[in-house]
Length: 269
Image (cartoon, rainbow, N blue to C red; front, side, top):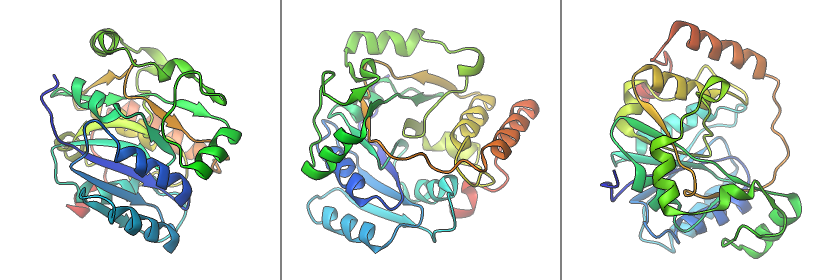
């Protein structure tokens, strides 16, 4: 473990440049900087493009912008396009409403291992704290930050990080639990299962589907606890009108033990 020194950082976004800005600022203060940043933009307006150009002018780290027309929530599709633009062997993935602790990428790479993908967690911010963060562009926080919850996910204890990465095992309904806002993978493993399944349109279960297919293919899940800290900004719930349909598709993947997405990453490689 811990032999990786370079990765691509993939950040998903949609029409919230204020959040994306602080997310990018947190990426640029990492103790282990990404080799490149790829923005997976699901149809934002030109304001987001202008922000990306502004931030790009402040850093030597290449920032690539994968964009598609706004045709509803298609996170899997734009993430596939972004994955295809990456040039490193390893990908750390967050959302554009995530602020990373300075050691977040370092922690992901420290426990990265062949044959595994990593599922991290998040600390939640309320609306008042989120508004303050967007206004002040603050990106450094502690476990006692007023307006945060799930504060145990904000603890960083290195020896526990190592122990839990090796010993923490999920079961039952949590077996396939993973949040796309804080994950990391080997690119070759994503290619082997054809990335995200673009049949998932509308919010919900595209991340779980990917997790299931990775595990069906023999890739194991490793939890990142006591490290890889991510702070999740508050936002209103995305419409979930497709959720039940997506759950039905996911259950079929479980039942049939599928590994391959019929419409997925290969069309962009």
